[in-house]
Image (cartoon, rainbow, N blue to C red; front, top):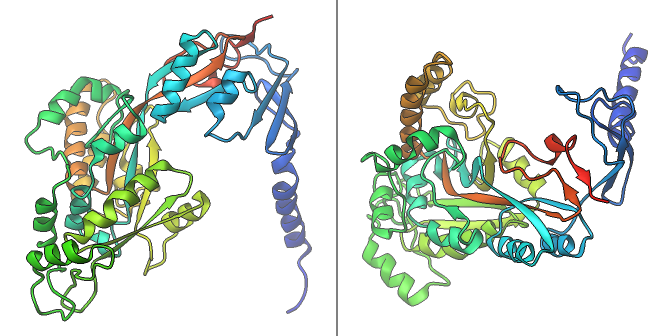
Length: 405
């Protein structure tokens, strides 16, 4: 009857609430080398799991207790130097890396360095807003001085990239030089003239009335005399302004670097470019579940690659992780072929990898900003952690780590 309460549904709901509110922050079953003790004050305490059988080699962790805590990234290297924390992983900021290396030279700490299997990027929604037009995305790439980004953020520990690759990937080590020298590979650099030419291929070629052709000379004059209150933007024939709104994490220095460059450069080509900073959870909400009339269609992010490279998930129109909403028959074909190449046919895979990179470089679902060297620092009492690969971190090495007496 209508209004009856289903006891089974009540039990399911209660179980879900119990998992979320209790077990999620206080698990009682552990399969790994450590078991959960407690979580409070942004700190997780772990102790050795007596029931752990060891890894494939039979190795077992020996450090009795581990504390994993949230620390302020701005002072993490200071905490490391002072011995307040023992390990700080994957530092990317050039200034903090310099500090870490200086501390190591002074004998205070040790560090590992390794090439990142990933990159920082500016990613788009490619099916809505002004960023649905490839030429708009390409124009944005020509409105940034990415070399200054790398220097400002990563110092001497990063490089500008033009495709979906990281320096540590075996494909890039095998074919990276060929890819970068390919005549079809675009090296996106700050160039307002090129950005203007690209935007002239979009619907945004008019003044506000939707009829009068947009005039670069007028834009130059307006910017020279009224840069702060610039109001000579491009419009389409229906009077829609060329506006791109970006959402970035307020904890990311890249958000600041972009906001210092893009909005002013964009004015000079008739584009209104706005950067909003907020918390990362909100960014993900806008990015993963955008509204049809999404306010934000650009996001500065970072991506790390799995050891097995399969971009079908991210860029095939049927891909389960296609957050950019890419829908292009060309990449559908490439990504389908990539995942069907025989595992031992290395050259065929590399050939198709090259095709994918050239597609990515042209379609530009994301603008790759930099790929960098990560540095992990650790105190002198930590032993057995001298590794230098992006695919093997503290959690993977924990069975071999010891604490010097």
